[in-house]
Structures are given as C-alpha cells and as structure tokens.
Amino acid sequence: MTTDARSAGSADEIDADTAIAPDTESRADNDPAVDDHLEQARLRAHIAAVTIELIRTGETLRPDSAAVSEAAGVDQEVVQRQFPTWESLVAVAVMRWHEGRIAPLLATAGGGGAVVFLERLIAANLADPRMMRLLVSTLTAGADAANPAAPFYRNQYAGFHRTVRGLFEQDVLAGREPATIDPRRAADQLLALYEGLQLQGMLRDGLDVLAAFRDVTGRLRRGWAAGVGGEAADGVYDI
Image 1 (tube, one colour):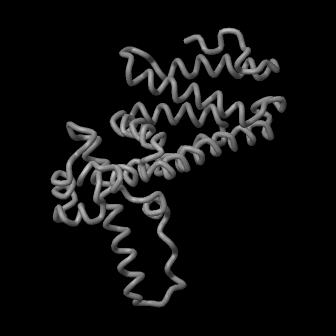
Image 2 (tube, helix red, strand yellow; image 1 turned 90 degrees about the horizontal axis):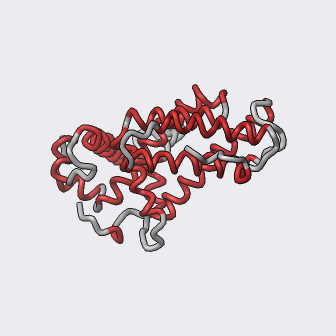
Image 3 (cartoon, helix red, strand yellow; image 1 turned 180 degrees about the vertical axis):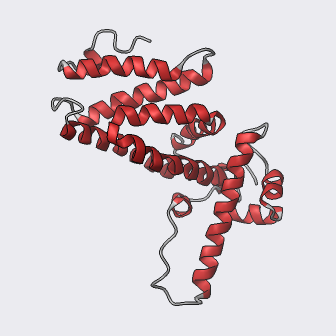
C-alpha cells in the first residue's frame, strides 16, 4: 500500500464497503456478477477485520501491506488491489469497527438517552484505546478538502451528530430531559464535551475521562433543567 491520499478510494466506494451487503435472494441464482461482487465484499471485509486486529495487538497504528497480507492469508498483491492506499484501507476498517459497536450500544444504552449512550461509548473507547486513537486520527482527513475520503468522513460525522440529536429528541419526548432544550444545541454541547475529553485523555496522563464526563454532564443537565443555556451555566465546563 502506498500512503498517497490522492489515490485513496472515493467516498462512494468507501460507503459501499461499510454498508450492509444487499439481500440477493430476489436475484437470479448463479449470477456470476452477483457472486463475484459478494466474494469481493467478503474479501474486503476480511482484510479490514484483520487490519483491525493488527492495530489492536500490534506495535503500530499503521501496519504495512506485508503484515496485513500475512495475517489475512492472501498475497500482498491482493491487498494492494483491494486497497491501493493505507487511507482507503483505514477508512473501511475504522468505520466498520465504529459502526459495529454503535448498533449494540444504541440497543442497550439508547433507552437511557443521549448522555447514557455517550457515557457507554466512552467506556467502549477506553476498552479499545488503539482503535480509538486511529479513529481520532481520521478527523484530519475529514478536514482536508484535498483528501478524496474527506466527504465520506464528514458524512459519517454528520450521521453521528444526527444520532445524538435524535436521542435528545427522544429524551424530551420521554421526559428524561426538559422540553425547553433545543436537541440540536444540546447535541452540539454534549459532543463538544465528549470529543474534548477524548482528546485530552489521549494527551494527558492521569485524566479519568469517564469520571470527568459524568461530572460535567451532571452540571450540564442541571443547567438544562433550570432553563439555563449550556454556554451560560456557571462552571459547567470546569473539570
């Protein structure tokens, strides 16, 4: 794999890799094109899964194509053909990992609302620190307009924000949060806290990210309940 971002897969190609495989029961049996498409999708998913394990257990966040091909049990040329660049592989791998943990977290924590969901997401991040570091590193790609994967990362981030905003909307309907809050602004505030603490946790030794999140969200929620805007709540961002 090269590391030239200009040769990374397009956003549409990456979206196809991170999407759920289509239902083919209604397609004609023994369609070679369908079979080949599914086989390629399985191969790419396998390579992405192997890459995730290498990142979790290896010495680097950027395993090369030789290490990936050996772990995947395929020729190096196969990896190179499927993922010509590190950027194209990491986009697929990190988003498969991220989306794969979001669904069960929403199922188990979503009923507790936005704050509970992000609290449990922090706990999941702490249990998988190397992948979390890799996820954070992709933010620079999303901010780089010259990177072909930038639209994909930005779309993924927008979807994450919509998820948190949707949880706040459910919180208001269920009475977990006051009807006076604006779900969009509440999502902005909570994600700013979540992301800021995650970054600090990577750069500062000894910071208990989960405890800090619980402390500050407690004060945020008291401000919301009192009808005070998050930006005006006294001391709400003091950690």
